[in-house]
Length: 130
Image 1 (cartoon, rainbow, N blue to C red):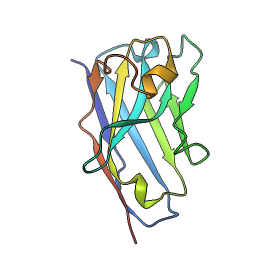
Image 2: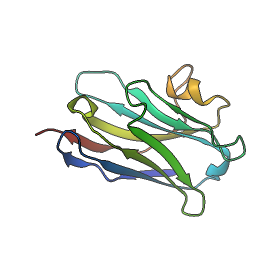
Image 3: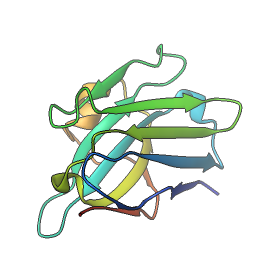
């Protein structure tokens, strides 16, 4: 059974940091691209940061809105993917989801070009507010 479970969300002040975790199980995620997506109230879901499979070199892509502030990484041994978020802003508030898919282009995955990823987690809430 495929599972992606996010954790690490919470309430943080502007300028603060959070580290989100996505634990994956039920499939050999070394061959999958993993992405972090978010959805703010009243807005469409958008890609944040994505990483290609280990087989494809673990290339990364970050949305312009988070470039230089967020960083995605993966730990193959722990079957986990992380999103380090620094210098958080109120506009980063939303539900953050991790997703997995067998695609071939990390930018397309993150810009949500084409079908949505096959597998999704349940999401974790991030609120940036003073």
